[in-house]
Image 1: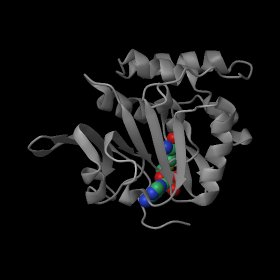
Image 2: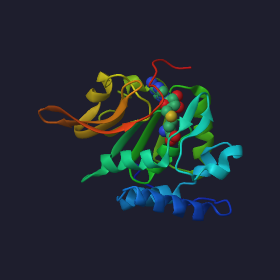
Image 3: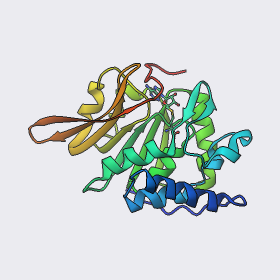
Length: 221
Ligand code: SAH
């Protein structure tokens, strides 16, 4: 177990102030978990988007990543991690859908270990390059189909999914530790954030906010 790390960003001019404003916006939208706010305040999101979009990196919006994918909106990253952390630590965490690696970097300062899987090789290569700058020893990346999880490392205390399947992938439920939490967007046109908690007796599902994510797709490319 590598343990949570502190991120010290090599910062562009003005980025720190822009992040501070973003954090204030998230607070105004109801995010209260100080560890989550601090992590978003520390991770240099401008390093994860193409240079042409860097000036928009601290707007609270999803941005294109190439490969028809998007970097998640900071509010939804914050909201999901806050729900997962409620009254507990993240522990050993699996992220499905690395994208550019932004959310993995945010998770790195709160989870003991982050394993992240991306199905598009070109995106994972980008994420590797992005995360290299930040030197996060507790983040491990893998090219693969996250729908089948990561059985060789399971069980996980936390699984966070950044793309929407129609129903909860069975493999991910099975790879949850007792007391573990899986949070994912569910559905097609109408998606809803769904938490699956594993207890001694089975699984408990709770529905939260309507959301909009790219679809979770099988296989790799
Ligand atoms: N976590 C990213 C969000 C990426 S968008 C961020 O911080 O911004 C969702 C990502 O999920 C896309 O890159 C997409 O390619 C990926 N994805 C979709 N289905 C997948 C699957 N079955 N396994 C792994 N990744 C998948």
